[in-house]
Every structure is written in structure tokens, then in C-alpha cells.
Amino acid sequence: MSRIRCIIVEDEPLAVKVLADYIAQTPFLELQATFKDAILATDWLRKATTDLIFLDIHLPKLKGMAFLKTLSHPPAVIITTAYHQYAVEGFELNVTDYLLKPFELERFLVAVGKVQRPVDGPEARDFIFINMNKKKVKVLFSDILYVESQREYVKITTVKGEYISKMSTHEIESLLPVHLFKRVHRSYIVSIRRIESYTAEMVEVNGISIPIGKGYRDGLENL
Image 1 (spheres, rainbow, N blue to C red):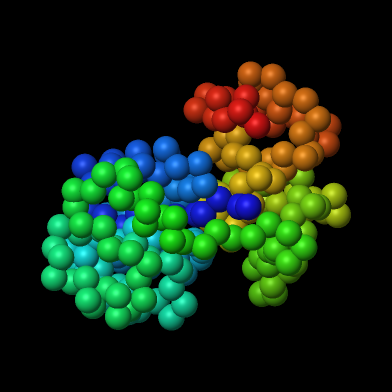
Image 2 (image 1 turned 45 degrees about the vertical axis):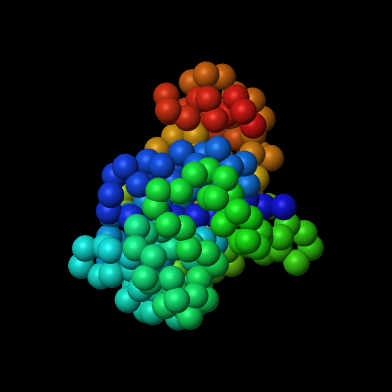
């Protein structure tokens, strides 16, 4: 089973830290990003997808419930708030659960346990479509060797050639399965199955040496 990808929309730093710590302790969860307001989250969701949103209600600019109503196809949502009076409205909007702050890890695990995990298997998606020359181009995960950031673009190197698309490394990372791809540098994502060798400083993919960032070395050792 795949891990559940999630984002946090919360303006209180302490609450963000608590949620991030709980997520880190839960093996089937993967934190993609955190946002201090719903406007930033809305912009991110225009370009990326997630499986679960941890959503505070009292946010600056756009309140949590109002933000939820703007989502035409919302993922699973777990409300996190200090105000119990919004519970009924939350469940009317089909939220998965309603966590009243402060909540313990045990209660957190009950909530995330209600979220259906993505399925790995024959029916699972094995490709992405990327924007290229005003077209949507299909790229198979199995063909990708590595992805390289080039400012506001990414270059996707595959066994069939190179594709350049206007998107960030973070955006394409959110679209790639975590069991198939690994971020090894702020500018590089590599296909795990295509790794031929590696040291503390570099990883070799299809004969190409790719640098490993200092903050990514532990993650490579844990493959």
C-alpha cells in the first residue's frame, strides 16, 4: 500500500510542529508541504495533488470552511481546531474527522486511520502527463531516469529522450510515487530502480553522476 500524502494548512507554528511530529511518527503518512494560509494552499493545489488535508478553521485571509467549499474535488480533510462549534458544519462538508486542540497522538491516529490509502497494483497510475509545447505529453514512470531543476522549469530525462516543462521540482516531486523516486538534491530527483551506484557525494544513474545534497544523504542510506 502507498503512503497517504498530506498537507497542513495552519497558521500557528506550534500547531504545525505538533502535526508534523505526529505525521513523522506515522509510517503510512507523508508530509508534502505546510501552508500558513488557505490562499497559498489553493495556489499549490492548482498544480499538485494530495490525499489528505489537515485544515485549521481560523485562518487569515480565507477561513478554513470557506476554503473547503472552494474545492471542487477535495481530498480527505481532517479539521484541526480549538473551536468545537464548527463540528456540525464540518461533517456536513464530509470531512473525515474533527480534531479538537490540543489532541494526543492516540486521537490523531484514530483520525488518520479513517483515511483510505491509495492502492498500489495493476490499477495504480504508472504515468504522468506534463505540459510541453502547448500539449499534454504522457511520460511513463518506468522510463524516467532522473529529473533536474532548471529555474522555473524541470528537465525530465528518460530512456526515450528529454522533456522540459514549466513547473517546480517540488511540484513534480509531489506527482511521483515515493516508492519509485528519491530526492537526492534540491535540484535532482532520481529513479530508485535506475540507480547503479552511489557514494556519500554522488549517485550514478545510467552512467550519469548526480550530486547528493548534504541534507539528503541519510534518506539515501535508508532506501
